Length: 457
Image 1 (cartoon, rainbow, N blue to C red):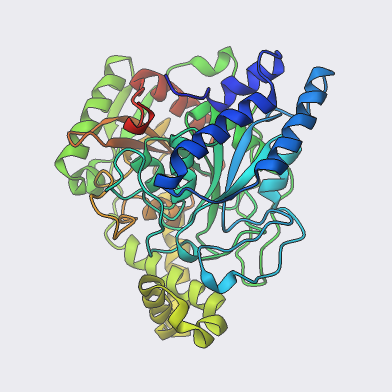
Image 2: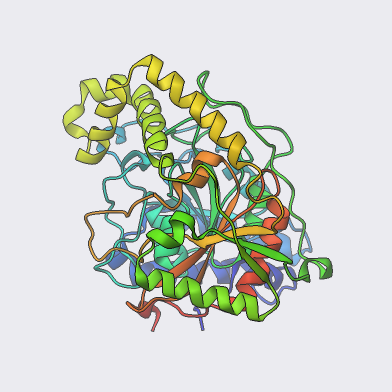
């Protein structure tokens, strides 16, 4: 049994007063004290501030007053996302003396309004790019935890918090979640505000939730969202594509089985290594045995050209953001992000404009691919967590959907032959988070993944 309940289980217990917010918080703090010296998931933890907040929320709950569906739930926040009065360091020594933000990012403000206890800042790789962070994988300390939301994924996997905020430009939600055996959601591009989030690429950045199960993702997504379309973070930001879709508590109508799943064998199953193909194949058979109709689906243009397109746009937009600081402090940047910024600075304006036109065309062409299916399914990653700490893995299986801007849910589906988690990636239509989450919940229950990191004993 996991040392902590899931987020939704804990919320129900706080609501029926069988668990207090302070009791729940102390369990999270126990896990941090037990494991973080090995795992390095946290930049810092606001223990006393969290205790004060939990005590206040406990008094309110005792009076029958609840701020929202996350009342008393401990949440971690990736350290590229602003929390009022806390430093945002973005994994870089350059920002040690950066001014403290005065306001919560809107996604953090939404969680706080819903009653969440914002516990601390989780580790990110430098400026959410590629140079590995100090975080370790809780399934095997010698394997990569993924990135750039490495600390968020590891913290959730070990019960250090019940949910965490992450972001994805290429694969930074889905990949660390897959490597660490938890669930993650990349919403439709623009569904959640990116204000107060250190940008990597204005056309590709997606904030999203990370948690242990789909119901937890759904609840966090609902609370992180806003009824108003997000405001662009900078004058160069692309407009929001879709406002967030409210996600109500699950009910009996959400229990229907999916009618049809589209298996994307093209590129994804072809490029996956044998242990991942075997784990995904087993998962697909389980879904089929429980009544899902699963048919192959292909994209006529293929996916081979998506990653170079993704890399060019990301490089240019990252370089635009970092240009002055990079010129002044190049030696303080890690080698991988420095290489990315050099690439971006070398791209001509004409080539960048052509890439944005190609991105718009790609999004139009691929938008209808999930149509006719409840969701598309495929491996979340091409391998399990690499057996090295020198990489955060490749985004090649996640970048096509970051470019597309389509919503994605990743769920663990089994252990591969190397005893590391394998994960299934589910992709829906733009703005259709609710049916995607409903289908992901059904798949999760059929697959019944219940393994936990060996560190938990």
